[in-house]
Amino acid sequence: MSHAPRLFAAVLACTASLSFAAPAFAQEPPRAVVSIYRPAPGKQLDFLKWMAAREAVAREAGIPAQQWYAHISGDSWDFLVIGPNLDDATSDKVDALERKRGLKVGPAASLEFRQVMAWHTDTLAAGPMTASQLIDAAGKP
Image 1 (cartoon, one colour):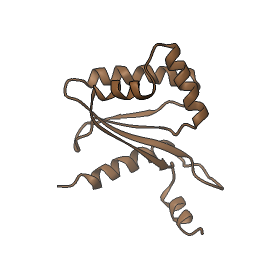
Image 2 (cartoon, helix red, strand yellow):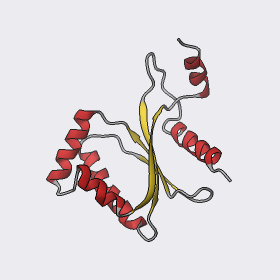
Image 3 (cartoon, one colour):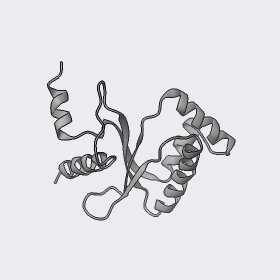
Image 4 (cartoon, one colour):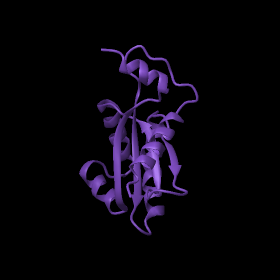
């Protein structure tokens, strides 16, 4: 049985919850990164600590906080996270702060991350938007 419809509904609901009233936008809607995580068995707390260390750096860098959702029932993911899509300059700033705190960055950080991860996915999404805004956007050339 496919979990795609439930997963899509969860991502849509979480993306919509970023704001009670979706902003009006003249050009392009804002972008967010939607990440779905399933830590390796027995590694959930290690994963959360790893992420919390990077969350503290992001806060120091002035980046808006990610929104975390914890699995309760249904599909097989453990955590769904919605956060800002960072530009290169901001990513470089975060990397520098992580190095300063003694955290791994780049490929070393990726390998460290994968020690606590069973699987994950990251998706670039536009929003938050209302269904009406999506209909309006669909009608534009």
